[in-house]
Length: 96
Image (tube, rainbow, N blue to C red):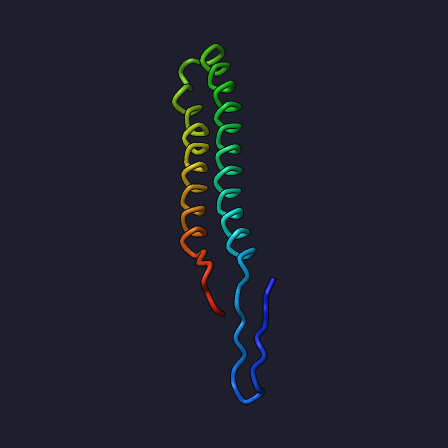
């Protein structure tokens, strides 16, 4: 993915990023967002079923059962933060 320009040995070497590098950086950011939110949705669904059963079996413990629902929501927010950090670092005109 890298093009190297010809530079004499006395000068440091420059590596120029191709446009494909920016594409894969953006795809990494979007996949972080998508997979984190898919996991959060799955976790919310599974723990929601558990809270429903808990409400039937032991209704005094429902507040304890809500903790996994909140944690699954935090996972989705974490994916959003990671996608923002990754997309902030993508610059198609960067020379390394």
